[in-house]
Length: 586
Image 1 (cartoon, rainbow, N blue to C red):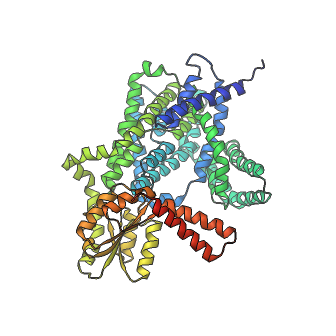
Image 2 (spheres, one colour; image 1 turned 60 degrees about the horizontal axis):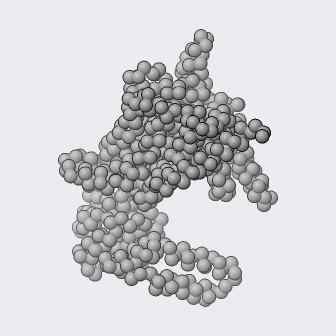
Image 3 (tube, helix red, strand yellow; image 1 turned 30 degrees about the vertical axis):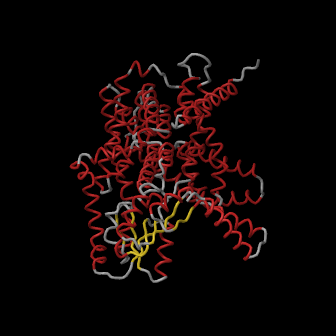
């Protein structure tokens, strides 16, 4: 039989990752846990088949490149700007606290200063994949709390990119000292590295922005799927490799910048679609290779170090985030969402640790403790997130602590709402109350105002409410599902329009609003037609179901493409709506 270590390692890695990924997914855990365990199973520290660690690490480099390329593709500055007031200072402060805590733990176990710093920076970064998964599973991705948590992780991703620049600099200094050669002053080395980084950024973001999109558009015109996919790979891998060889930067950083450039082009969505399968496949190999280097007996031999670092990840980071969000002036619910969401470490922690290990800044113990923390924290994180309402209820049982956590948020809310309360007290015209001011809320608001109806917007995004207030609009900051927030508006309101997509606490709000004002018309945005019975029962007058409207929109597109006339299209779309309406349980 031919000796094919690459094929055998790939087969073992993919098979083990597939089996354990299915098991962890079935257990409603992150598949990342399964991929890491797959690496442990085929690694040198467990009996049975042993994959080629060196080959797996080379393949993992491709996984890192494609992961960071994907982050760059989906990086949108507007997402960060929307929650910049809490995400930027919060993520920076929380990363600093986590780094200092990990540094203290490392110092207590006799680690060098630089190793402790790298471990702390790696532990301060949470997994975007895990956070997005738990937010979606708990229907919180579209909520203000979810937006803050995602914005927070965007800042952490940027922090990761900055650290990727610093690690080779710190490593070069450490290598020179170990070799007995005179080391350049750290500031000088750092200055040179930053100059190289600036040159790389200018070349890729400015020069590449003029060339790369043009090249990709030209390839698109050839109508060859294979060539387009190959072009995406060339942009990701060639720029990443060039960044490393020409500028001394990490390949992960070059891939991130390449993704940013491609993401600005008109064909970015197709590039993302083509890169996704490859990224996922090589990401599996990346996590598997990380697991292959993990010695499970490390937890037995170093239990104190493991639990101390786990305490930093699952206690220190969440508590720091909870207090920081509360001090900035956001409600306890947002603080809890961010805190629990950050109680884990993930893919970019491993990217940092892997680069640090190559530059002799992190030893085998550092790698082992990071993988151990990741396995435990990522396994527990979905379970912790499902108990979010229990944590909130537990805090409410301690009124002093609850008031303390919400003190600044309540004060900010009162200051923001002071003007609108005065305006509502002296106004006598009928009102339309709009809950939520996303794209749907903005459209409804504009249409109602065009019809001469005065509107009041209720939203939990402080920046949105402050902007509306500066425009002289009536806007209330607060939880739209809290009937007390709406108390001053409901007696004079003719319409209550709920544009928020999530259904949590929607029923009690509608029932309470109808008790306050029985003549109030309540219109609701709902995701599923199956919600109709519940909505009618609590008093909603009518609802728009996303499920039905998507079917109508697609049918209309197909009919238009087939050349159907306006009357036919109108008849068919009306028929589809009636069909869905009659089939819904009432």
